[in-house]
Image 1 (spheres, helix red, strand yellow):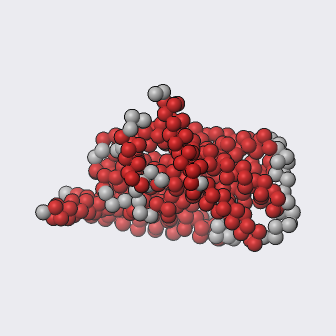
Image 2: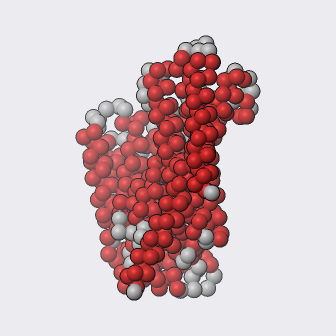
Image 3: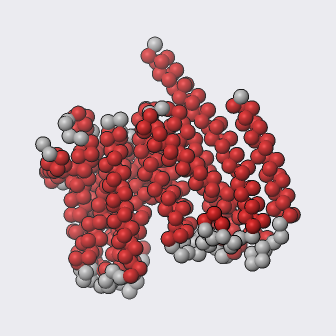
Length: 226
Length: 228
């Protein structure tokens, strides 16, 4: 079986088991909505400044909701020692990792694409004026979040405190990607193009994705097998 | 032997610090713009140097651990990270005191400061992960991988001063290509004060490494006792 087939098989397996129970997906979506609701108490939701902070708000919600999905990524394999079975299977650790990351990526993107219109409705924001670019930022930043999150999910899977440890490790490490995504999303929701100074954020996002994907693929075998 | 070295280094560092304090407080004149408070730079900058040095050592030790799987590298990694975290805290606190006097505020969300805080949190996460894992081999392995991830934030903090034009001053030292921005006598004093601080850091690392080794020994004895 080719490497790509292995990645897709793992990804397909994860997605199938998730869509049958919808555990992580429902929890994450509900959580994202709760956070969006809570924000409305933190400031006046009808004011003009909503446009200036919209990128920050929505990415905070995504980061919190994403942690729920990522927590499940490896933890779901703990029952019946499925994780051991996966490790002993002829699939290399990096393929296992990429498959799992891809599955979480799809789930995270679903949560994001559902949350965006709801956010737009509740806060009266015309979010889709630059939809193509917004999707581009969404794809890049979500991959960064997923790749680091899946790696840390593998690191913390055997801990008693993993639900606590993952966010504690993940959020500080995620800041470059989150910061870029927030800046760019705010610009795009305001209906402006990415120009001049803002390209540095796109470059930061791409650099973040490349560096952390490479690091994760290089070290995941060590973490899983030893 | 090691014991003696620690005491000897401690004594030398103490003597140097006393001498440096004398020169800093009484020998050097006040700075033209900032007055007396600028003297904090002799502790602020060297503590960041020390912290960076510790994190570089820690990252290297973790990479070596992954390559060779020797426990002593893991001991070095945890010792240097702990000491590095303390020196980051010193750097942050001295920076905040300085900022309060010159900028009028304790903290500002400027990229350099923000990254420094992130670095501190990232390494605090590393130390917390270590506490959460009981098995020594898994602990060494997983924390070594996390340490390599963490090192990226150190690199960003180091470069943040160049990438973003910020409220935090740009480099003033000649070694970072800003030649002549700082008075040579003051710059020399800064390096002279770094030496004892680095020595104190090394002493702490040595003590901490010995503790780690002893702790590992106790753990393995305890496991043996359980087995019997």
